[in-house]
Image (cartoon, rainbow, N blue to C red; front, side, top):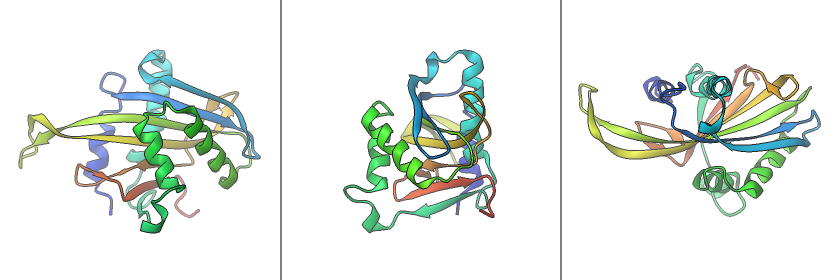
Length: 195
């Protein structure tokens, strides 16, 4: 089960002044799942309006209704080895989105599996959250106890030319559990939990 407080701790930082996102990468896909165009930039180099727009998209994933729209899933141990999606996500995370070959592989895999009725964008955000130690009364004590390095992916239908709308689905990897990285789990988001 996902703890709502953990997700709120992440989303409170997703403002233009407080964000620590390092990069954003993405692909614009046609409805057949083929890559139309890609980009990969330092998040802090975005102009203010683009930063704000993209933060709203990223924030939609952890801020969604926990354990309904956002659910946690365990990677089976036999799906965590060489050639697995888990290995690909670990590689993307460790390079901070800077390896274009890994990113293109990820977009192609999404394109093969995601069924869309129109063009869409795949957006991937990378962040490192230097988590402060908190006392029992939840007051910050200064020194950090862990750096939570994670990815947020949002798949958004396009509402204009290269203009992503609200996310239809996505994920947070690795899962954030008890204020710590949980490499064996992923939190998957679906706007419509019935799907």
